[in-house]
Length: 208
Ligand SMILES: [Zn+2]
Image (cartoon, rainbow, N blue to C red; front, top):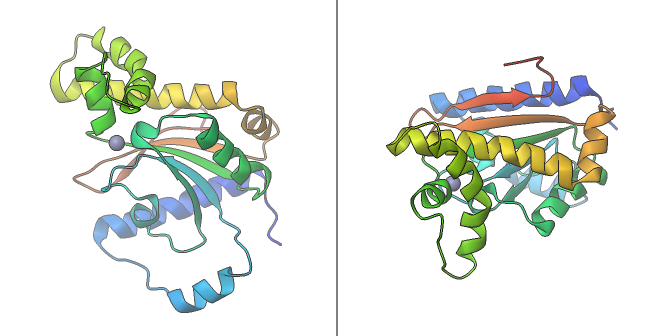
């Protein structure tokens, strides 16, 4: 079995994902034999990264990073909001599938963030829970004086930062894996027009 849980390996997985994203940007998808893959993977999975991303139909992690069956363990919620089940899913990937990399991948023009900016007092079924979790980041963003799309992007960046802090605070499993160097974490943002994924922060960079 490939040695896992080393900081270096998490970084290598990230570079692999970046290479996949470059292929996606250029429209040069890697050909794969899905029938063979499906058959091989029926015996078990060993994904190389866990990804938390938005449910938005335009931002599927597997396509954006040009990955395939068995490569990524993906948790998707609108606006990437966290609850015990989504955190538990990420914990499962870290504790039992031993992924060396966790990616928080937000995106430009996020509808959930836009809703939290425009209607922080939203009261509509369980959608309220999504908006409420993003609303504090939207309120902080508003204090910068930005407006329109710039305000939405500021709120998105702050929400992504909040998600990193919340995961470390709420999940002992994730916090310990990070502390012990068994897990790397990348916070990134997907640009809808270019198809490019930009890094906002990464545990293997001193600063970015
Ligand atoms: Zn979104």
